[in-house]
Image (cartoon, rainbow, N blue to C red; front, side):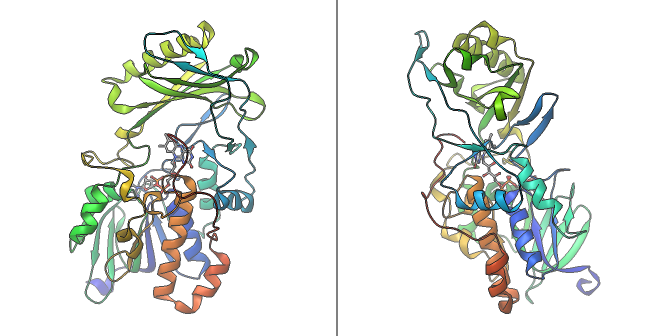
Length: 382
Ligand SMILES: Cc1cc2nc3c(=O)[nH]c(=O)nc-3n(C[C@H](O)[C@H](O)[C@H](O)COP(=O)(O)OP(=O)(O)OC[C@H]3O[C@@H](n4cnc5c(N)ncnc54)[C@H](O)[C@@H]3O)c2cc1C
């Protein structure tokens, strides 16, 4: 019986940055919120691992000076930031030729989180009211009843809510969550064809004792048309510690995971010399195989053209279910900045629906959406 189910105002599905921003804003508006995160950790694609030499980002790495909401949130949460070192020459490696110095650093000025990008999610989670966050508790089904009740089934059980937010990548949500009634046809189609930002990417990181490339006047940036890794960057921590180089490749460039590490080491050696082939350790993440990020069967038509599509702005079930992952943002989609904007917008629309008198206070307490800058994630791959 529906009346016997536990009740709350809003269920947020996903504890990545967008879901945590939404949960924060909704709880600050006085609504009772449960945020369900499938993994045993928060942060989603903001994933920092503890290495003996310091934190290493296997997902998001940078933010930029023209991303006002990331800057404001980092400041509010006391996370700090440091400038990505960008001194020295970039390298160009054209197929069949030796790598050459290209001059310039090859990178736009960027900023980093001293404790890694996941620290943003962890700090948001730490400030949530007790009992709001449910880890290792994936949502399996969302049912919209005629009376407006939203029934959400997670592994821990079923509950009734007045509203819900899907803060999961849209294509994965369609694949992994059973919607009753089924999602409106155009919404399901758009969601399925919305590419997961960086969802087809392998990120590899080599950790070193010191950033030796800097002594040779190299920035750590390299572009390779030979592949399989196409783009390399310095990912060292503040003051060069931990010293690290990262690289991106398309995940379909590899057949097996051992191909991946061997290819990474040998490209590092070709580009940066023998010392680069002997890192302290190598860490890799293939985001195409991450079942909480990318659908098992991505659409062959998946593209970024549907980022911020109107179907994601209005939600469904009379606006009671809203979308909030970075891909749904109308600006900066793909980036952390987009995730913050999407989570804030979804929360604001739900507060407007459930308790219009609260909208004024939500405007004051949600992470404000600050305008400025550009309208699409700007970094070539991240
Ligand atoms: C390799 C890589 C590099 C990147 N580099 C940068 C960068 O340098 N700068 C930048 O700004 N951005 C970068 N990004 C993008 C950035 O990570 C994302 O924009 C941001 O983290 C997205 O947050 P989100 O909340 O929208 O989605 P996600 O982080 O994907 O969060 C979705 C959450 O939903 C959870 N979930 C999934 N299914 C369920 C379910 N059924 N029930 C409950 N929970 C579920 C997931 O576990 C996840 O925690 C990068 C991403 C990757 C992968």
